[in-house]
Image (cartoon, rainbow, N blue to C red):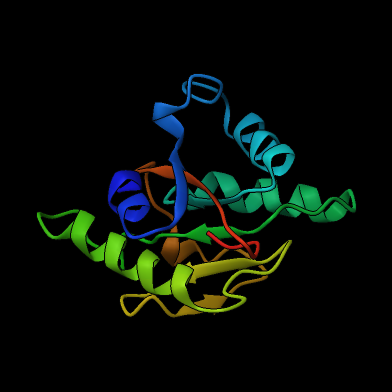
Length: 138
């Protein structure tokens, strides 16, 4: 996905392709994203929503979290294409992710804001990406 998004002009890095992040605990990945000024895209909703809550409680701000639900994007042969297309649409929109914001990616690349976790959206770890652009978005 990162390669495809980069080819479309977005500044995206895959966590698994970044030696400083590969295999790190989720909290360290978010800290690294904060230090790099990058928003984080993840399907690991069940782990990152509590991390976001701890960030908020501590008065810290990240560059944004984009959650990819397997309810919206089923893990089938169209998964990569669907998520890549939705992320491309989101990244092409002005001010798509605000610092400290948490959004859920939808099929059209539009998003739904979230302030707290929704147990129906919990999913397994699928992918995490880091993005940097002219605006803080993922």
